[in-house]
Amino acid sequence: TIYMRFKLIGTTCYIHGWAGGAGTSNATDFKISLPIVPNPATIIRSYCIGYAVDNGSTTQAIFIISGSDNATNLVVCKGLTETQTSWTASGGKYCNPPTMFYEIA
Image 1 (cartoon, rainbow, N blue to C red):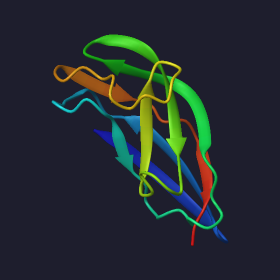
Image 2 (cartoon, one colour; image 1 turned 90 degrees about the vertical axis):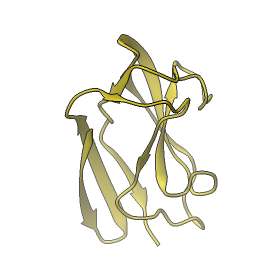
Image 3 (cartoon, one colour; image 1 turned 135 degrees about the vertical axis):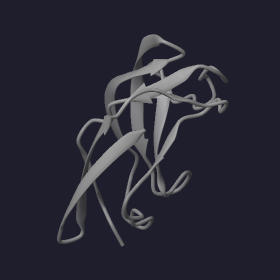
Image 4 (tube, one colour; image 1 turned 60 degrees about the horizontal axis):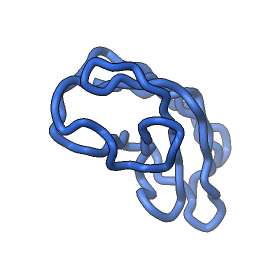
């Protein structure tokens, strides 16, 4: 379970998340729903580097907010690449999303 807090100041949404523990997933990607949809007209890809756990192994991760593809998600990419499909399709997964911000519509 990923817990997410957010704060809205004007049209800027600040997010901060943390893991409540590992969850089991059969998906090969890792996405977290954003609390408010980004403004697709003004957002550019926002990146942060953090860490995640995939099937019990700690790994580096890139967290991406994008206004075009996956417009309503914080996408977690395993390793230091933008590949979304490299997660193990079994076992426990979790991450601690870094504090990020983006503009809303």
